Image (tube, rainbow, N blue to C red; front, side):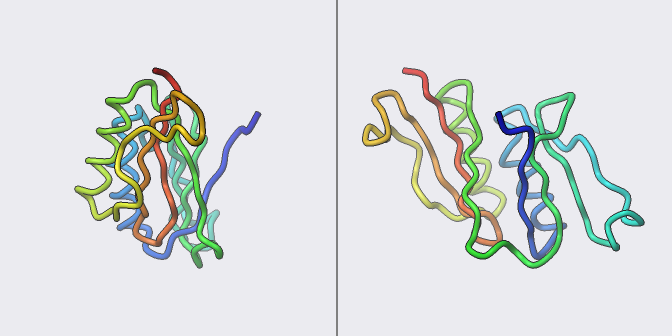
Length: 127
């Protein structure tokens, strides 16, 4: 079981806004910001469904190659809302919401690129 994961972003302010809004339909919110005196002056934020962060975003040189992270949605409406919210705050379409039967019968996902080009997905595995 994975406890937490994360990625590096080039513009912390821009990415903070993107993830705040894009992940909100999935129940995620910013839970923790590490004080800059511990991060060499870089922005480091933990997001998650309360009470614990499981997705970390930190300023720095973006990961190469860019990262793919999929967030689980409780239903298909959350996938649709994630996609709409992500595009509204500057995300780039990388696959509109819809079934992906080549993964499995009930796979329903949406893909967006964050401001640095990371492939961020919301997925529901329920019919």
